Image 1 (cartoon, rainbow, N blue to C red):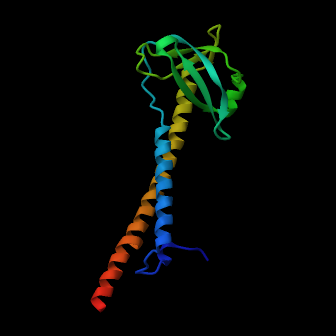
Image 2: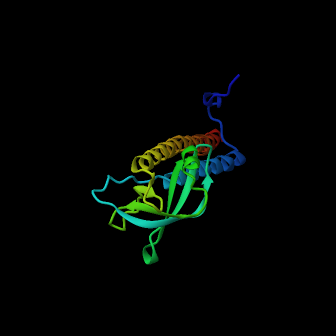
Image 3: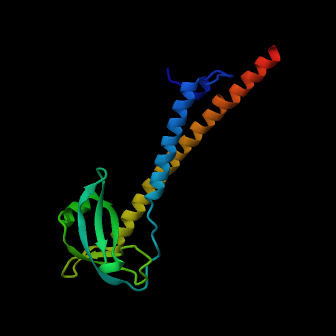
Length: 182
């Protein structure tokens, strides 16, 4: 026999331990939702013009999950250097032979404030990762991040509802009934 939320008796008041435990779960769900919100990648519209900048892989590819890996690029030279992480398909990254640090070229917008890589090229300017692949990977990662944000956000709102209803409201009603009965 399964447990349903409707099985909670009317007027039930959460104990202090249940309140603390629920608050911890609520905070955990909220923090995980915000973490995934921070992992969203803004995909700008395709630029009219791109420039090639030197880049190199500064760290080995790390596997996030079975399907996703991070490719770490350091783009530019001198004062305009910035780090850029491409979340890519693990299977496809393994076929690209990008395991070791090496020099590459990346296509970026001429406006240095917009830091989105539109393509990755090898030393001989052969295309390694196309704009379409980067956009596809970014969309897939954004979709999965949105799914986590929505799911865990709904669960955190549900936990907040339980805390307010059974921890605060029913406690208030129980105290009011106790005063009226005396």
